[in-house]
Amino acid sequence: MHRSFRRVPSLLIVLPLLTAAAPAAVTISRDHPAPSMRLDAPLKATTVYDHGDPSDMEQYLLELVNRGRANPQADALIFLNSNDEYIQNSLENFNVDRQEVIADFSGYAAQPPLAFNGQLAQAALAHSRDMATYDYQGHVDHDGTTLGERLDAVDYDYSRAGENVFAYAQNMIHTQAAFLIDWGVPDLGHRKNLLNLGEYTNFREVGLSVFSENDPRTSVGPWVVTQEFGLGDPTIVFVTGVAYRDEDGNGMYSEGEGLAGVEIQPETGDYYAVTSSSGGYAVPIDQDHGVLTVHAYRSDLPDRQTVILVEAANRKLDFVYGSVNLGRISGVVTDGAGQGVEDVTIRLEPGSLQLLTDGRGEFLFTDLGAGVYTLHAERENYTVYPNDFTISVKFGEEFATTLTATLQGPEPPSSGGEDPPTDPNASEDPITPAAPCTMVMAVLLAGLWLGIGALRAR
Image (tube, rainbow, N blue to C red):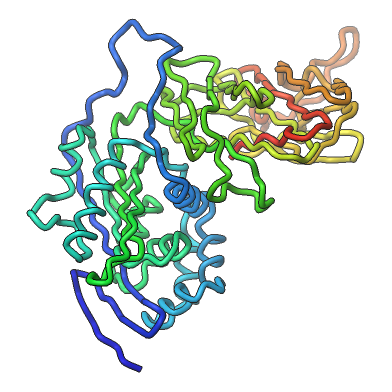
């Protein structure tokens, strides 16, 4: 088997039919803080935030990136066990130690999603086009332009920035595997950029360019990919996601499923978004905002709403529409300071469904048909109000409401009786929160007709 090696600056192994190539990564930072992205007063809630217009393929790559950030261990196993011939060829030719990869990923924490940014995408496109035109893979353009200069050229103000490039991508799964596993790159720079593992990699935004290159005179292609990562104003986080019809039923966005023109409207804040041609969106929100209700509207689609907790990180919120007649019930439990309360037991009848609120105090019931449901919430040494409330949905009708509950400490002893004995070594209030807790829930049930799908918050 003939093999030839080429470094530009990465290793390329050329095999009959199959190509194994290593991508390239770089990270830069600035010492000064980034200027605030918030506009001077007055601000209007009708201000549209333009996050760019990624292609279907670029939106899909973004979904793969955020899937990997949400669960690095699971994503690594997906690629290590993939039947994609290009991935398996690369793993073999770069002698990837699968057990070492599994051990590495077992220590990686989940990361918030990245929001697509149009300025970063412009810089990424310029660099992908340059690599395709001049037949190379690297981080410096043919004329010497660097990453920082590319970002300055599109007026992206950053305090942290990074770049991944792969000029020999065969498809988007191959691309994400190359960056995440990071074959052929000893310092694992791509993996660090993707998973916030480096010193300067606390990114919140990304711009992607997937550039087609099929010129037989060049060695790059068929896809030349650039990922530009950035951190702008550190006081701003993003609610980001995609509106789509899950036509293939795989539980995530696939190319061609996006819904354009869906208005994504938070109930508070300065901005709203309209989904791009591929269905994606991003809305900037002040970090530590707290409980936020987000609506999705389009004239030919049923209205959607959900409640999420916005803290000091981006949040993923997808709006999924389909032909199934199933609904969902979602909500969040917070304390008086607006912080999520975890491990609250939420029970739903009929069906004997039960779950615990997560670390953000959120919960989600899925795959619910139309009908009458009773919701009950409890946690030991807390009282919850209201409780055992019912929700009724008629055929062909979508029901949505917001409910409020209060979490209190143990009830005091009744008057006239003796006080219970106390433990002199116990603290005054070992379990009960210092402030009352608030439980805010958004209940969303879809009716039984085609076109009504489920709302997903991730």
